[in-house]
Image 1: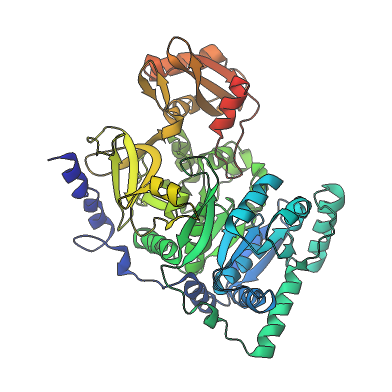
Image 2: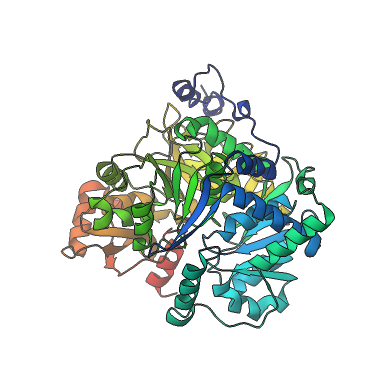
Length: 579
C-alpha cells in the first residue's frame, strides 16, 4: 500500500466506533447546530435564561456575574447600538481589546448579532501592534478596557477608529465592590490612566441601544438572519507560519463546524446546564474563544472568568469558591498549578476533565496531574487558522505524548518538503483539510496561497503518526535544531529536562556552532536549588541520543512567555545570542 493510500484509508476511523454507536464514517454534520453564531447564541440565551452564565473572579475573591438572560438582553442592546447609533454596515469590523471580564462575552455576542465581524485584540499589545491590527482590519469601532486607553490615545489618529467604547475589568460588579476595585486599580496599583478621548462607556452604549430599539421597535434578529456559514464572523490575528501578524478569516461555518466536531466527540461528557468551566486562558485566544466561550455557552455552562492567571495564585479563589468541573490550559499553566501547595493539598473535587492545547503537554505534567487531581488532562491540537481543533484525545482513552486522532470530517496527512506523504512513523509537516479551516488570511491572497495548497492547509508543525492513526507533535518546523545533519526537536529535550524534580520549566533552542552547524542550548528555571549544569546534562545523556543532549545549560529566573503561557523560543534565542 502506498503512503497516499494509507492516509486515504483514514486509519483513525476505527476509533470512532468505540466512541460513538455508529458504524461507518462519522460526520460532524450528523448534529447540525445552526447556520450562524448569533442563532446559536440566541438559542442558548433563551434556553438557559435563568441560569448563571459568567462570573468574573478577582484574585481576592471579589466577583461580578451575569445570567444567560442578562447576556442575551445586553448583547442585543449592543448590537442595536452598533447598527443604529454608530451606523455600522453589515460586515464592518469591530475590535475588542480587553482581558477576561463580563463585558467581553456581551460585546462579542453583540458584534456577531449586529452582522458585523469581530476582531479580537491582545490587550497587552504595544501602540505599534495596536495600530497595525486596527489598520489591517479596517476596524471602525473599538471596545477597550480602561487600563489601556492611554496607549490608544497616542495612536488613534493613525487609525480608522471612529468610535471608542470603554469598560472596566470590574464592570457590572456590585456598586460598592466595583468602587473599591476601581480605587485600588487607580490609586494603589496605578494602572488606570487619565485620558481626554471622547468615548462612550459600555453602560452608555447599552442604554443608547435600548432606547433606539424601543423607539424604532427593532427586531434584532433581522440584523443577522441573512448570515450563512460562508460569511466571515471573526478576524483572529496570528503570526501564522511566516511570523507577520495577519488576520485569519474564520467564517460562521468554520467555528460552528468546530463546535459540532467537539460536540460529536465530547458532548456526552458535558452535562447541559450543569458544568462549571474555569477560563484562565484569555478569551481573545482562539482556544478559549471557541472552546470555553462558544462550546460551553452552547451547553449552558457556568463560566468563571479569571482576568489574568499570572501569578498563578490569581486562580486560587476561583478554585476555592466554585465547583470547577472543566478547565482549559497550556502546559505551563498546569505545571504552575502543580507547583502550588494550595492546589496539590486541596485539589478541585469536582474536576472532570482538563483540556490541554496551544503547546506540547509534557508527559510528566500529565502524569502528576492525574495523580494529584484524580482526573485526566486530555490533549488536543489545533491552530488559529483551524478554528482551532484539528485533533483530540478521546476522553477516557488518553494516550501520553499524543494529540490523538483527527476530528470528524477532518483529513490529516504528514508530508515531506516536496509535499509528498511520508511513511508511517516518519516525521513530516502536518497538513489538514476540513470544514474548520479558515477562508484565508484577511486581504493577503499571496500568503493565503502559500498556506493553503490544493485545499490543504500547511500548519508548519512536524508530527508523526502511528499505524492506528494517532498523531504526535514533534515540534514547530521553524524551531527544529540541525546538529551535524541530525534533527533535534526542542519539545523532546524540554520534556526530558522536565522530569528532573527540581526543574520548573525549560526552553531549548539552537545556537550557531562552527563544528556542528547548530548546538543545543537549554535555559532552565528551577523550582528549588540543588541542580547544576552538569546534573542536567548527565540526566539528558541517560535519556537521549548524544546529539540531542544540551551542549550548554543556563539557569534563568524566568522564561519569556506569551500572555497565553507559551514560551517564546524566539526571544530566548535572541537573549541567548545577544541579538
